[in-house]
Image (cartoon, rainbow, N blue to C red; front, side, top):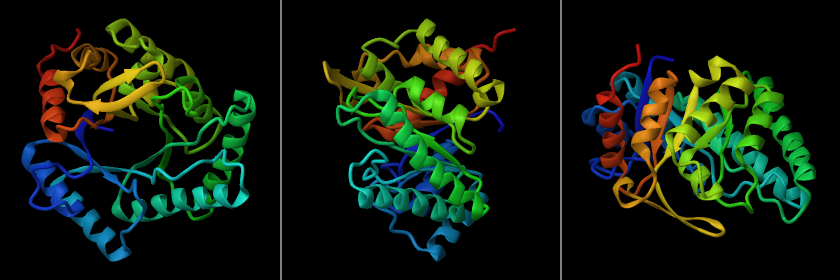
Length: 279
């Protein structure tokens, strides 16, 4: 993957309409490099529309990712809810593949006060079933369990890295704001660098060259994430993160999820580009 691309989680607010196609066009006009298609309320895009999305992105030189519906819990107690969650993830991967997306981010589940190792094994088993089905369909995009912002949610950094090391076609989606909110720390150059070093140690240098990240300001309390904030209204040290990403040669997607979508995506891109490259 060539370089680190900055973009928005969803269609930029300044696009002509809220459509994915107009979002891609606006991303290109702004000089950003990527966009995440938000299927968070459900996959409501047909194949014809997906092909148009792919054509538009190819012409504009914009790279795409996708976010699966929020209504996924691979640790659900009821079998039918697990199957419905797997179906939603598969639907996203299938339509996303037609769109030309390169990875699908998803929220894997919640703990329900069960032992962490039991939950991990359950989610891993159910995720492997999805991966196996995609392989049968020759769908090779990445599935990316997201690092989540509340301790009640499955998805700390270690869990995301473990799934990625143990399952094919799985790689982490590291939400640095979530990790900050979840841990109450992870908000300095040294801590950002430690995360990147852990990714490289567990998954290899290639993983740093194929990253999918979510970045925003964030408000948080004792139970973790409360809401996303604009970067300049929050305590998140995004400039130090940009420095770490540049120093470690990170490539891939940096998706902005601040309320000020394109404004903060451009701020991150400008901050990153202004940093000198280490010799």
